[in-house]
View 1 (cartoon, rainbow, N blue to C red):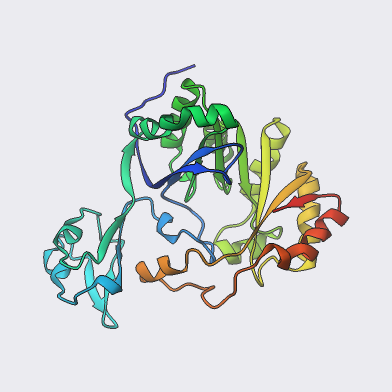
View 2: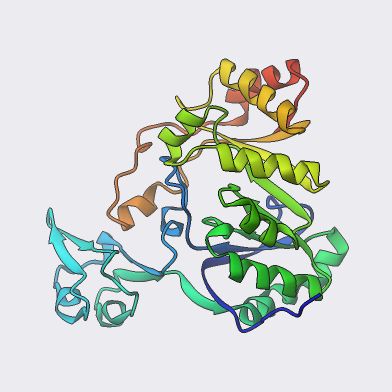
Length: 304
């Protein structure tokens, strides 16, 4: 087996230690930037672009507009009396952040090498060994940075770590296979059973995700399909029936239901973006018991 390139760089936006919901045991989860999907309910909109982004917090802004003066890319303007960051122009140099007197600007995302990330991950090796945990890579979408993902996963295997990934599976099969070769456990997003509706809600069809999920199961990979239950998108009893059919077709016997939440709402404001689900209430487990029971009636073990 080839040795990992531990100097390989990629962009991440968070390293979360002591994660217990991102695979078995206690884990460290590394969140990649970049995602080809544009889910209308996305809880991490700051993860969608691969490059670092500047966020603006109105509560700290002194309206001095000094950031506009110092930006080398001229990527900052005023829109509806608010600071507006043109993310396609911004190169993430950080000049505006350093110069802002009110500390109203912050950089979301940073370049890290495989080695820099592993140094953090390996700090908790004892907890992984005691709990059966390890490293999880998430996003964004890890398949948006396939080379970086491969090197990080390979380096983790060199350190005898258990590896897990959260993925939409949206990539060509050859890219998907190259990344998941070093993955022990796949948490696989399943947004919708219908390709047209999937595209309406995420911007892409579900054909590649379903293909890659099926192929992973056929290869004997440990795969857990996870369904984010979204109001007026996939939360009807008929959706549960059709999800169950799709799961049987790809060879899955269980799935995890993830109730819709509003944890990411404020991030849209920081990014000057409109949030399609701003006025929708969060869902809770008790709201979805009848929905879960439909899966059970169709011989799928659905759990929260």
